[in-house]
Image 1 (cartoon, protein in one colour):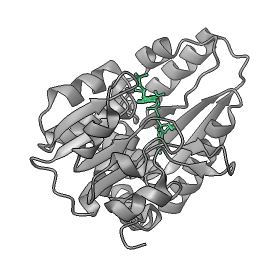
Image 2 (cartoon, rainbow, N blue to C red):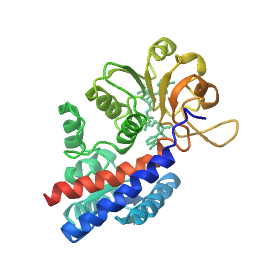
Image 3 (spheres, protein in one colour):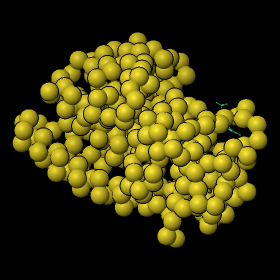
Image 4 (tube, protein in one colour):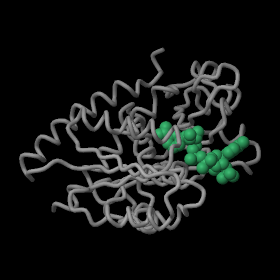
Length: 289
Ligand code: NDP
């Protein structure tokens, strides 16, 4: 399908440019950037993501270490590990895999993380930077990887954002809100919809661009969108009918109406690790300068 955005292809292109950037950094600074993934417990999705980080980092020549801690670790042990990574001069970026085991406060762990190494833009300092700046300049501070990926897709697909109506469905700190701000910085007029939104159909039908970050399988249906809409589907769900992975958008029926649509899998997902590696390189550069 011509309007189906190929996230895997773009990810391969980004990785080949990252390979060259990393060779240049090794030449100029005598070492390559190092990402550290902190994995506490045995959450299946987190383990798979960490393994994927290792594989992709190896493919571009970036160092990636995964620190694995038992799910029985105490909160203080996890905080101590974060402090040690903050201090480690060889570590440029730290990704703390969520969810953490329930007895560990996510807020405390995030508050302990050094903002300069916060590759997923979750610390208060990075959130404040994002909301303060009126331009999208990723070299200055880290934004959450998925929101950077969504913007990359729009840019790569040549979608004009200035003056367009965008609707973001979902208002989480990790996807909905940061992508809203990045779209606003690009001069789109953005509506944020959520679980209390009334008449979702009327709101979505006015949208030139829709970003779905809901976590509900096939929530957005054909009748909700207008012809020629651009649809970025961030959702990762299990299709209750087939048991396969699916997005928040009913792809089969929505796609024929779209100018561009991202599939799940194969759309936003492959780019998230690319954004993570780009954020790690940006942290490295900011420290090196
Ligand atoms: P959250 O659960 O934190 O947020 C979901 C948002 O969707 C909330 O704002 C919620 O509204 C809204 N919502 C839920 N149900 C409805 C509904 N029926 N109608 C309207 N709005 C609704 O999820 P995340 O933001 O963390 O993730 C969203 C999706 O994106 C998930 O499927 C997740 O797996 C996926 N994801 C994908 C990533 C990738 O790289 N591809 C990375 C991160 C997440 P309210 O605020 O009112 O509760």
